[in-house]
Image 1 (spheres, rainbow, N blue to C red):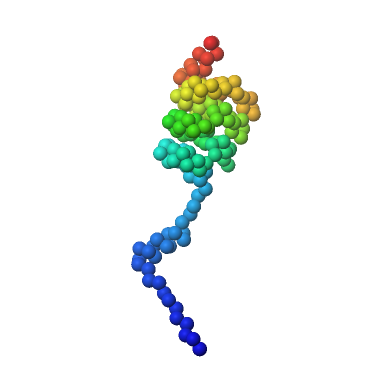
Image 2 (image 1 turned 60 degrees about the vertical axis):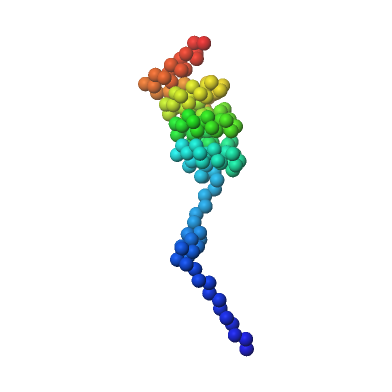
Length: 154
């Protein structure tokens, strides 16, 4: 009867630790990581995802928002510009019909609203509830109020 020889591989403590960590590691989908980088304002990582084409900019995520909407919510004009440079649609609607301009007005980001308007964002776009971006401006935010007041006169 042939003998069975069992071979054991010796692992160093570092190798064992790496193997355990690899077995326990969690992997998140690219979209989840991408949105997290947007929320954190990590332009370097956002740029990497965009250049590698690991994500689709027009995807409406479970939050009901697309990447551009998330960038506006974060208040990062630089991130908004980066996404637009890579093809984000400034007219794209979120689930309730909100555009990036609606969010900029609602959340009080005059610099982002000004930028979106300079690119031709539709100031007359209505949400599903019929709200225009200007309807969502807090009257105490003089910059935004003036931005829309001046536009109506001209």
